[in-house]
Length: 330
Image 1 (cartoon, rainbow, N blue to C red):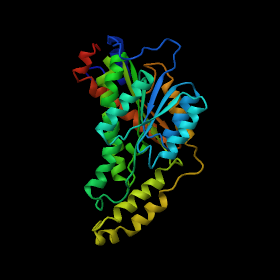
Image 2: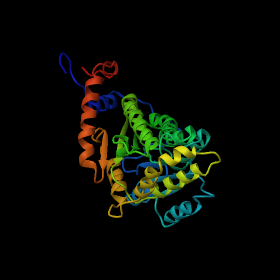
Image 3: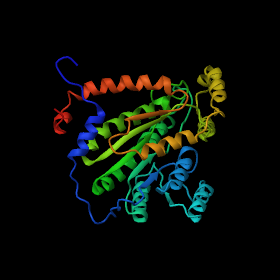
Image 4: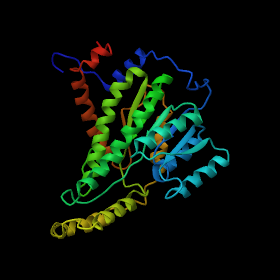
């Protein structure tokens, strides 16, 4: 940068951590050096979240696997995870609906009650409501945003005070390659994943001085989870609403919709465990050594240069922000 100096996000985080001086409150258990870390995962009923919950537990990490509707829709998923705990894995199921402030507050309090602390938060819960942007009632388009970004922010706001009191913590934010590249007919989903990455990047700077690290994971492929089937279900629910959508517009998008429903299919050659394993490995890295974002999957090679260009621009921009002075980066 002519006349100035670029500052990398990683150096900001390292320096912020070095400046952190946080007193531990007695309300939270402080682990012995050999004590297992505690991870809280949202959206653990299926897909990446379910795989992470079991994978973390089998690695010896204390797991708080969260999901909504543990007594109804997700009763079987909760029972299956409970069976793992009965077989000796360090895992508890906690009910959290990330759309509800009250549920998030109560669920995080329950998690702390069970485990004493939260070292790692994996914001994994998410949905996709597909369809042409023009056809979607605002409430349906916004449901992507409220779940994928709003849910993550609710969780961060509830967990950050716990981590700050402990004196450390890590937040892993699940995003998507579609937070960088745009897929027509998934406009709401892409918007939510772009937004949550921006929020997570900002948060990473803001909490560094509290010895808290934030990193983003971008699955880059049509991994076989319930994502595709659920997206089709949300689409059907939308068009089944009385008076929705506009029938003339629906006819105009007929071929688009046919293509969307065909393309919303998992790639059977991909293994979703690749993503969960990457998250578990990321969580195990030393503070300050994790990448700001990690792409995983067949489109990683295309995504990495985009991420690198973004990070270079961000490093230039942060040099003009007073946060650099606040963190004494000179």
